[in-house]
Amino acid sequence: MHDLAATLVHSARSSDVRTTIVDGRVLMRDRELLTLDVPEIVRELGERLPALVDRSHGRRIQEYDA
Image 1: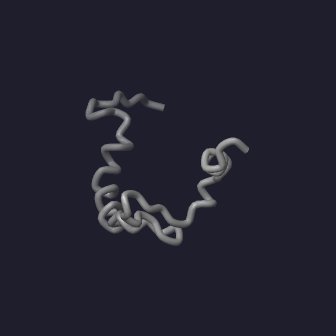
Image 2: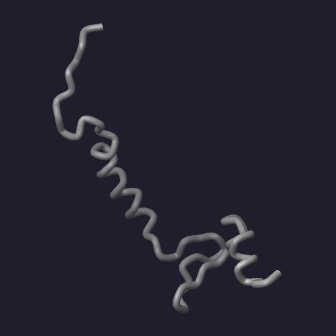
């Protein structure tokens, strides 16, 4: 192995990561995200979901008799 750190990074899988620290700040501990407000994200997703799944992008959709 020429570069042990590079070998570890490139051979690791996401399931190998339990804790993530960036600039001294713990972002994830024991696979639990510490910097996200999950209830707030779920609430906001509930508000935005109708627009996200609306494939008409606000335009009228032609209806055809079956």
